[in-house]
Image (cartoon, rainbow over all chains, first blue to last red; front, side, top):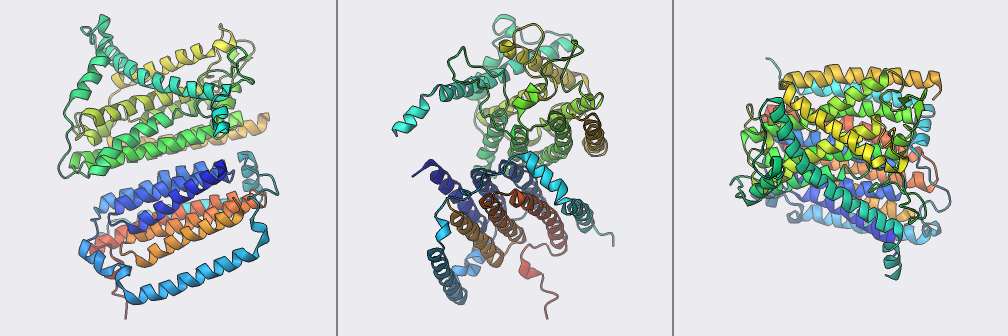
Length: 175
Length: 353
Length: 99
C-alpha cells in the first residue's frame, strides 16, 4: 500500500475512532478528550489534502479554544458520570423498535452508497489529480478579503453578538 | 522496503535525524542549565550565594535535583482520576518539546558540501511554522487543566482553571503581535522571517524586526514578550502556581517523576518562547563579527540573554494578583496589540513593503 | 485517495455525530456531537476544494469554524443557565413546555 494510502487510512481511523468514543463514553471529560483526538486525525487529513492553514487553524481554534471552553464548562458544572443503571436502561441496543428502524435505514444507505459508487467512473483517480492545489496562505487571504469580504465582516459581528449573548445568558439572575 | 532503507540513508534524512537528536538533548540540558542559572541568579540578586557545595561552584546541583526527584515516592491521591492524573504531565511535556520543532537554530548549511542543497537546521521546516508553534502552545493548556481536574483537590482545580484561563487570555495578544511580524516579513515560515532580518540599515542598525517600522516593531516585541511570559506561567504572572497563595496550584498533588515532567515542561516552554522571540524579533542567527555559517553562536547568545531577562523578571517584579493579571491581559495588552497591528498595517501599505 | 474516500469518511463522521445527537442523554455530549457533524462538513468542503483546485473550500471552512465557535459559546452558556435552573444535564428534564 502506498504511503499516502497508509496515511489516509491511519488518520481516518483516528478520526472515526475518536468520534465513536465521544458518543460512547459515560464520562463527559473523556468525551471531550476523545473529540480532541478526533480533531487531530482530521487535521492530518487536511494536511493530506494540501490545506496546511486549515489544518493548523483547526488545532488552534477547535482543539485549542472551543474544546477548552467545553472542558471549563464540564469542570465548572462538575458533571457527574452518567449512572450505569440509567445508561443500560436507555442504551439503544436494548430498545427493539429503534434498532429495527435504524437497521433498515442503515441497510438502505449502504445499498444506496454501493449503487452510487458502482456508477461513478470518475472516482478512481486521486483527489485533485486534475488540477494543482492552492495551498498558499497568501492566496487564501487574498480571496478572503476580496470575494468573501462581506461574509468576513458579518462573521465578526456574529462573534460579537455571540460573546455578548453568552455573557448575558450565563449571568446569575438577581431575583 | 529497499526504498525505505534508501530513503533513510540519504544525507538529508540523516541530517534531519541528527538535528532532531541534537535539539532534543539540547533542550533537556538547557532545562538543567536553567535550573542552575535560576538559583544562582536569584541568589546573586538577593545578595547571597546560591548552591555552591555540590560540585565546583555548585554546577552539579541540577544533577542532584534530578536524582532527588527520581528517587522520591510516587504519590497519587486515592480519589484521583488515574488515567488523567498520569496523562496530564505527559501532555505538558509533549507539548513543550513539540513546540520547538519548527524553530530553526542556525543558517541553512550544506555541512561542507555533504548535503546536495543547503538545509536549515530545523526539525520540521514547515511553511506555516509560526501557526504550528501557536497551535502546540494551545495544546499545552490541556496538560495544566487536566492536572488540576484529575488531582481531585480544591487547590489544584482552582489553580488549574485559573492558570489555563490566563494562558488562553494571553494567547490573543500573543497572536496579534505575531500577526504584526508576519505582516512585516510577509511569510509564516520562521526561516523566511529570519532571512528577512539579514543586513543593515545605513550600515549600522541591524535589520531586526524589533527596529522595523519604528515603533511598532518594538511595541510588538514588548507585547509578545509579556504574553510569552504569561503563557509560560512565569513571574510576574505566576499567581496560579504561587507558593504563598495556592499551595502549588495545579501541581500540588504531584510528586517525583510526574512533577519532574511538569518542571521540565515549564523550563522548556521558557526556552522555546525565548527561541521564538529571538527568531521573530532579534534576527535569529544574524550577527556582526562572525561569518554567516557560524550563526548558531549568535543564536545561542541571544537566547541566553533572553533567558536571563526571564530570570531577571521573576526575581525583580512582584507578582500580579489574578484579577490584575486578567485585566492587564484583556484591557491593556489586547487593545494595544490590535492598535499596533493596525498602525503597522497602515505603515506597510504606505511604505509599500 | 479519490474524492469518494473523503466523502465516505465525511458521511461516516456525520452519521456518528447525528447518532450522538439522537442517542445521548447529556447536553454536553449533544453539543460535542454537533461539533463532530460540523467537522464532517468541513472535511467535505476541503476535499471538494482540492478536487476543483480552488481555495474556496478552505475559506468556507474558515467561516464554518468561526460559526461553530460562536455556536459552541452560546450553547454552553445556555447549558450553564439550564443547569442552574434544574441541576440536571439530561435533556429529558426540561419538559415543562411539552403538552
